[in-house]
Image (tube, rainbow, N blue to C red; front, top):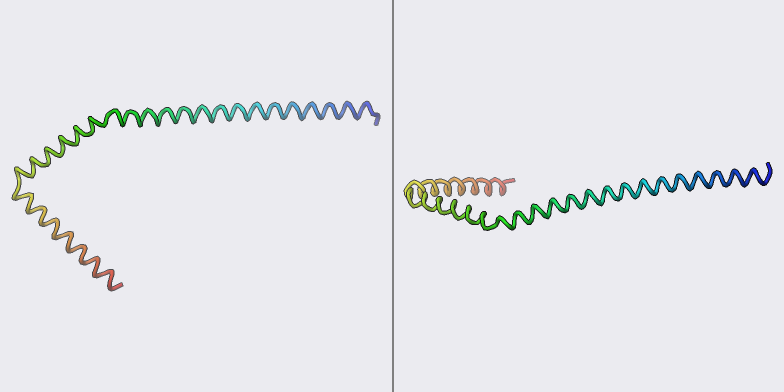
Length: 107
């Protein structure tokens, strides 16, 4: 093999490596750009959601106040029924808690 053939072969190999590396770098840069765009879009969606939540806080409080007021009015209108239901719920909860406590001591 002559020096010229070796030089030409080495140049050809170097050119192929350079082209492959260039293609790989361009592909990687494109993928990084896609990831950056994806993250930017998702961050924008999250920020819009958060800002919308904070903008609607007065409406949430108004709605909660309306529901709490309706619940309080229901309690006032049905005092006897509400007291009976609450007493029954407390009794059942106490019995279940006592049973769980007793069972856990036995095990």
